[in-house]
Amino acid sequence: MNRTLSLQKNVPLLALNSFGIAAMAQFFLRIERAGQLLQLRDDATLSAMPRLLLGGGSNLVLSDTVNALVVQLALMGKRVNSEDERYVYVSAAAGEKWHEFVLWTLQQGLGGLENLSLIPGTVGAAPIQNIGAYGVEMQDYFHHLTAFDFQTGETVTLDKSACRFAYRDSIFKREYKDRMVILEVTFALPKTWQVRLNYGDVAQFLATKNIVQPSPKDVSDAIIVIRQSKLPDPAVIGNAGSFFKNPIVPAVLRDRLVASYPSMVSYVQTDGSYKLAAGWLIEQCGWKGKSLGRVGVYPKQALVLVNLGGATGAEVRQLAQQIRSDVRGKFGVDLEVEPVFI
Ligand SMILES: Cc1cc2nc3c(=O)[nH]c(=O)nc-3n(C[C@H](O)[C@H](O)[C@H](O)COP(=O)(O)OP(=O)(O)OC[C@H]3O[C@@H](n4cnc5c(N)ncnc54)[C@H](O)[C@@H]3O)c2cc1C
Image 1 (cartoon, protein in one colour):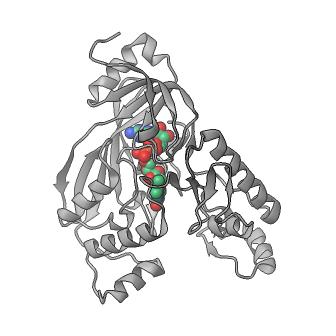
Image 2 (cartoon, helix red, strand yellow):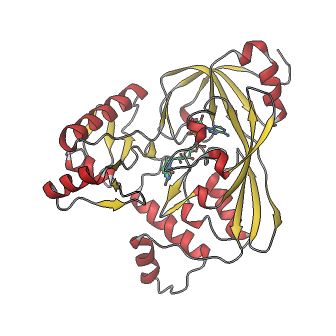
Image 3 (cartoon, protein in one colour):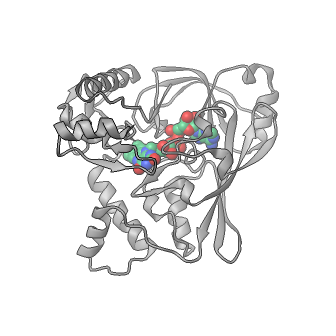
């Protein structure tokens, strides 16, 4: 084995996953330079092992023992790249913390990413599920990324269309799963910024502060306060953010449900289908604030499952299954889980 790769065995992952699951990695490798990925690929023993790429661990539900080589991506660095008439191009390495990167762009006087403030995790994981919040998705400002292709050993550049972004989805969850390691992501931030306040509570919050013409920093500050009031802090209560995607259903099913539940929230999509609020569906099934074993449904937001102390991945899976089954039984709607189960 190559000496510059320092392989560790039986490494505790408790501090490396936001759900606070006391998992153990059978094998563990920290990657600080892109070149180490080539060494990993060239090592016959290591490259034959199943791999789990680890960013900030904020979208994972781990089993007690992760029988794999956990590869922690700790590539660092961010920079303003270039500009043209309309955009400034900024890049950040995979291991940079997303929220710190957003704050850094704001410090450079660049708007665009402010609605995505305070999302945990790393820059490298942001394209995986095309992170989104408050009416903005990462893909809205994405320009391209570079990735290490484990199949060929090459570093490739992928533009937006190659990444096939969709609602909490991308090619990295499908064809490129276990193949591509995202190394660096580049964003195109507009020189002429426009505020995006599609969500009532942000506009309302700014109004209460008498901010009529908000700056990107004002929007970021508002979103930080709102998120802190609504979502549990993983440092205090283990969680993985929204546990289920908001389901998209055909108009015919939505109409039938509205007839039975007139207060049901739904948003029409460009193709005529409807997005439903998963949190509302879960609440209607009586799960808000309830628990099963050591896993609970957050009392302030039914979309968030929380670790009540010492929960295992199996317990999280059990509660998620029970909720899915109840929602399917009551509404005929299938909820898709957002975090990755390992
Ligand atoms: C309190 C809380 C709030 C949240 N709010 C939101 C929200 O508003 N919107 C939203 O979209 N998400 C939200 N999330 C989910 C989470 O923050 C995002 O999915 C985030 O992008 C995960 O980043 P991570 O570095 O922690 O990834 P990890 O959990 O470490 O990994 C997630 C997946 O990405 C893969 N991966 C990680 N890094 C790389 C890489 N460099 N190359 C290839 N694959 C990689 C992993 O193998 C895994 O499959 C929230 C989570 C929490 C805990």
